[in-house]
Length: 119
Image: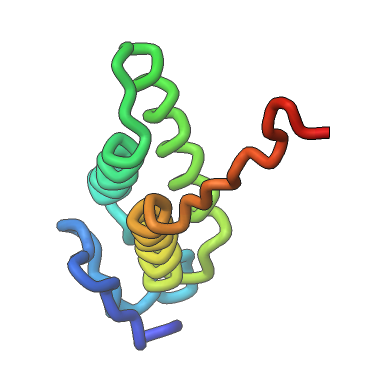
């Protein structure tokens, strides 16, 4: 098990999640992750999505909720350990934050080279 899990800057594991806890003897690490912890992680993902993809209609919020749930389920299924699960969620959320912060500065304006009357 990966015991070198470090929280991404500014994040802490949700309550009910102990990233350094050993996997259950002969069992799957998922058995020790409480459903409430997964719900809190989905809510954190949803908060991050809402911050970067604002929606103004209930249908949009419902779609963001479905995206957050699918995203969490995909990582939950693919993770090899609880620390891997938390690391993958944290890194993905950090990458969303980073992309959003970089987007305005990276916008490139391409001048219109088709001036009227040229030709």
